[in-house]
Length: 421
Image 1 (spheres, helix red, strand yellow):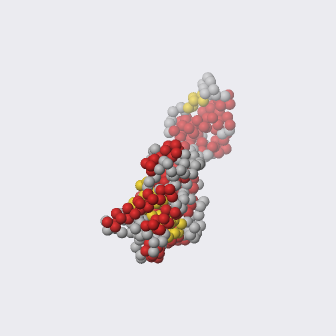
Image 2 (cartoon, one colour):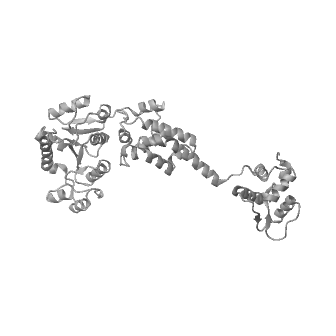
Image 3 (cartoon, helix red, strand yellow):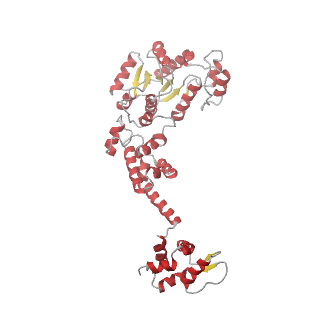
C-alpha cells in the first residue's frame, strides 16, 4: 500500500501533531507497543487525537493514545500500510541511535579485524589497539570505514618493508604507495606510520621529543642527504666486508677516531663484531681524542655523541645493541648531561659510566662551572640530583679523564685476556 500523503498530512501532519508523532516514533524505535501519554495536552493536540481516532478523547490534562489504534486507523482508511511508513513519510526515516552506534562499532571493528593478522606478524598489535582506543584512525579517515581500511592497509604495506636499508623516504613512498610524497609530514599514511615507529615498531624510540629525521632513521629510512648528523667513533670492532666497515677498520689500525655520518650508517650498515663487548659512550670528543692519543689500540670501543645525541648517534647505538653490545654511557655531570643520559636510559637502558653519586662525592673538591637551568631528576640514581644540586657546580668529563681512560684500558685488557679483541 502506498502512502496517501495528502490525507496523511491532514490527519497527522503539522505542528499540532508534532509531539504525538515524536512519541510514536520513540515507541517504534524502542520496540514497545504500550500506550503513550501526552501530559498537559493542549486543545489543539486533543483535536488531533479526535480526528485521528474518530472520537473525542477523555477529559483530563493528559492524553493516552494506543499506537496500535493509530496504526489500525491509518490502515483502515487506506492512508498507509503501517504506522512506521506513515511516520517516515512525514518526518523521514526512523533512526535508532543505539542500534546505529552498535552497527558503527561493528563496522570499525571489522576494519581492525581485517588487518589484525598482518599487524601481529610485525609486532604491531598494540598499535592497532591504540588506534582503536584513541580514535586517531577515525579522525584521519574522516570517519569513513572504507577509507580507514585503505589507510591501514597502506600503512602496513610500508611498515612491512622496514627497516629500509638506507632508502630515502620519498623512494620508499614511491615504491610502496605510488606517490613520492605519500609519506611526507601531514599525509594520513605518514601520520599512522610515524605513530607506529615512535611508540611500537621494534620497541619505539622512547623519546617524545625526537625529530622527524631521527624517527625515520629508527626504521633505516633517510631524509635528504643525511651527512650533517654525525657521531665520533674509535676502536669499534667491525667486519671489513662493507665499504664503511673497511673505513672503520683502517681507522682503528692507524689509531684514528672516525666521524660516521647518518648516511653511511643507513646506506652501508657495517657488520659490527660487538657480541659480548662493552661499548662506552661519552658526550665530549676530547675523551675520544685523548683515548686515541694515550691508549692507541689498547682502548675499548668508545663513541662520542658530540653533545645531545643526534640521529647518527642514536642509529649507531641501535645497531650496536642489536648486534649484542652492552652500552656503558655517561655525559657531563650537569643538568644537560643528566637529561642526555635520561634519554639514553629510556631507549637503550645503558649501564651508567661513572655517572653516579659515588663519582660526585669522590670528586667533591674539584671546582667546576656554576650550574644553570633547572634541576633534572636522574632516572638511574635517586640521590644524584640532590647531590649535584647541593654541590652547585658541574663536574665535566674532561675533569675525569684519568679515570675514564683507566676504564677503557682495563676493559680492553679484559677483552684481550678473554680472546675477544
